[in-house]
Image (cartoon, rainbow over all chains, first blue to last red; front, side, top):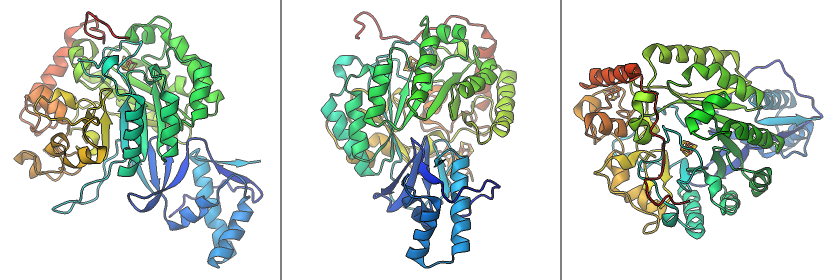
Length: 100
Length: 383
Ligand code: SF4
Ligand code: SF4
C-alpha cells in the first residue's frame, strides 16, 4: 500500500481505534481481508492488514510498531514510518480515531 | 488500497466465460409502508401491502444466505424500515452473521428510544433522507407537515449516539437550487457524507416527470456546484453524486452491471437485480419463499437476462465502453425505447437519444406544479 504523505504525525503513545461504522473482517467468499465503512469496501494490502489487526483500541501506536518488528523482524525506522503514514491517512478519512 | 464505491465503474477485464460474480451489497426493502409520499419514490407504483410482507424468520434466513453468498453490506430500507417492529432483531442477526448493516430511514416517527435500541442492536451506519434543505420544501415534497423538524431531531440523536450519518437528498426541479443548502445542512448536522442523487425516472418519478424534470441549465449549474464543493470540502464531507443522465453523453453504469455486484429483495420476497426492475414485464423474478438466495443469484432468469455483455445489441457489443457502462440502464431502455434490451437512450449513440432529450426538455418546460404523490392504491390502504 502506498500511504498518502501527510504532515500530521501521530503521537507514539496515542491509542488508535476504528471509528464507529468501520469494521475489519475476513471475507471468506473472496479469500481476502476487507475494511468496511459507510458505502465503502476497502481491500487493504497485506501490510495494511497486519497493522489493522493490531488496531484494537488498546494498543498504543508504539506497541503496534514493536509488535510488527517482533513478528516480521523488520527495521524499526521503516515500520514506524509506514504505520504512521497509513494510520494518519485513515484518521484523515475519519476511519480511525486516536486518543488521547 | 482499492476502493469500491457503489457507483464507481470497475475495470477488471472479464474473461470470455467469466466466473459468476460475487455480490457485494444487498438492498433489503423490509416494507413499502412509509408515512411520507415523495413523488419520486423508488418503490414500484404497485406497492406491497403489509399482509404480503415476509415474516421475521424468512428475513433472518435471507440475511444468513446473503452473508454466505459473499454479501458484505446490507442496506435496510423500505418504505420506512422502522415501520417493522422486528427491525432490531434483524440488525442483531445481520451483525451476528458478519454483515455491515446500514439503515436507510426517512426519520419520521422514529423516537429517541427507538434509535437507542437500533444503536444497541449494532447498526453500523445511518442514512437519513431530506426531501428539501428547508422545512417548506421538505414538507411540501414529502406531503407531511412537520417532517423536516422531525428529521433534524433524528439526525441530532444519531450523532449523539456516535453513529456515522449520511444525508440522502434526491434533487429535482423544486429543490435543485438548494444543493448548497443541503451541503450546509449536512455539515451543521455532523454528517460525514452526503448523497446527492438526481431523481431517476421510473415508477413514481416517471409519472411525475413533468413536475420533477429540471432544465438543462439547472442540471449543469448543479454539476458545477457539486464539483466545486467536492474540492472545498475534501476530508470534511464526502459527496457521492448520482449524475443525471438525461442531458449527458454517456449513460450511467447502472448497478455497475446487471447481476454483478448487488441484489434487491422486495417486501414480499422477490429478488430483483435492481430496485426498479419490476417495470420490465418480460422478467421472471424468483422469490426467497421458494428458492435460496444463492440459487436465485446464480440461476434465476431475471438475473441472467442482462448479465455480462452477450445480451447486448450490436451497438454496445462493438463499443469500447461496454464494460464501463454495461450498456446503461435496462429500466430506462424499457421506459423510453419500449425494449429492455436496447441501448440506453441516454447514450448519445442511441437512435433514441434525441427523443429522450426532447422529452426531458418538454417536461422541464411543461410547468406542471401538482404532484401525483406516492400512495397505496385505493381503497384498502394497509397500514
Ligand atoms: S422516497 Fe419518500 S415515500 Fe418513498 S420510501 Fe422514501 S421517504 Fe418514503
Ligand atoms: S453504445 Fe452502449 S456500451 Fe457504448 S457507450 Fe453507448 S450505452 Fe455504453
